[in-house]
Amino acid sequence: MFNAILPIVREKPSLNAISTCLNLLIEANQIELAKEFLLNVQKHLDLKPNTCIFNILVKYHCRKGDVEAAFVVLEEMRKSRVSYPNLITYSTLMDGLCRYGRLQDALDLFENMLAKDQISPDALTYNILINGFCREGKVDRARKIIEFMRKNGCQPNIVNYTALMNGFCKEGRVGDAKKGSYRIVLNFLCKEGEVEKAMELLGLMLARRFVPHFTTSNELLVQLCEAGKAADAALALFGLLEMGFRPEPQTWSMLIDVICRDRKLLPAFQLLDELVLQ
Image 1 (cartoon, rainbow, N blue to C red):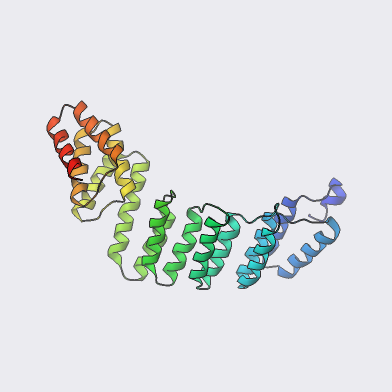
Image 2: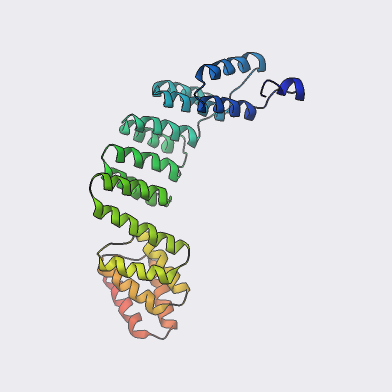
């Protein structure tokens, strides 16, 4: 079909057509045919590979276990403006390094991506590192990756938490895996606006000494305030304070405002006392 494009359409195949065909060949493990295909398009179509085509070659080398060859492709990409490495390039290389236990090299590449090329990682990129550390039995390092995600504005998703929970379970740390599962459900309920169910889960978590994440706790308090649930907001806050949680200043302001509007001055004064003590 690819070879029929030129005689039928009377135009050269696009780079998208070339990258699609090349990717299909590599996915089907038809490596020799892929090489023959590339040589043919270079010779007869005057090919100038774009980032997508280079990324396919990076994937090919990583799957073959030849990560060094993949880095050679990376350097070739950096020489060209039209095929400069992107997030997919780096994610593929990091995955190749992690699969062969080269975690420090993967972290170094991650830092280069941020500092040198100023490319922001997504949840999938972070998950490559989380899985890599979990495979090597370094679950606490994987948990630090999730903490780094949050601090840098990328909220962990269910895939990230699941990878971490699997890591804890493999290490026999079932209790840690349960901190993870509670947080996943609470985060989901807050995102869906299910504040009543979130309050029930929060009560269960606090009773079992599981502390929600800082961002999720603030989000729940804000949603309770916005829903006019002053009593629930105050109850949730005092329970969280006992566990060492300290809300953001904006959350404090919203809590005091909604409680005052509800004409419950005593809880408002108690909140102010807590605020002064922080």
